[in-house]
Image 1 (tube, rainbow, N blue to C red):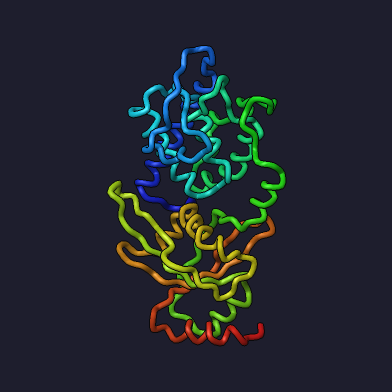
Image 2 (image 1 turned 135 degrees about the horizontal axis):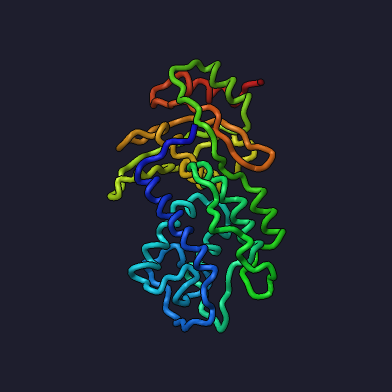
Length: 294
């Protein structure tokens, strides 16, 4: 079964796919037509701090109006970009929607498209969508002389080495349970963290889920302290059904999450324990864990 997601999330994803749908015609864009250079507006948050401040209009999506097309359509991409599905996904997008203003047009290279597609297509699949045919990477230039290239192999290796969230089925929230059950879960899995998850309603009626405060390690395993908060936040975005399970409207829920890091570097949460403030079973299990032998 596909993961459930809210009407707001569905709308955002449909807008995103509609934007991609324009790309088929955009890649046939007449590079000889007159263009102009304009400053990237502050309202266009997804393309701020990309290394340049001026963009060319019309862009590769065929948009010529900042207010009516470029700025609002750029926001359609935000749900995917927030998942962190690839470190150059934003650069790939902005090369299309806000191309750098130089003497020549700089498109994304085919190799960059392939790199972004291979990392971000699984995220779209988690939402029930396939990688759009209009974004066929064969449409982009293969020669890397005058196009935007992927990061170096060294940087790609670093990215792959970082734990990344995966699309997954959601485990049931367990309650009640014994301290023995919790200790067994800690023995069986790579990591366990104590985390607060909140849910609030946005003006768009699309719920926003967030990992609040500090993530407390019970068992760290291969997770990285400086990366885990962001990792879990992205996990919520990629798995909205899990997010709905972990947080109730207007409340912050405390949980113990246990899971594993797969050989490909992706992270799966496989056990979830609801942590009540006065829960003696969890508190006892965590206290015993420091000296427990599996």
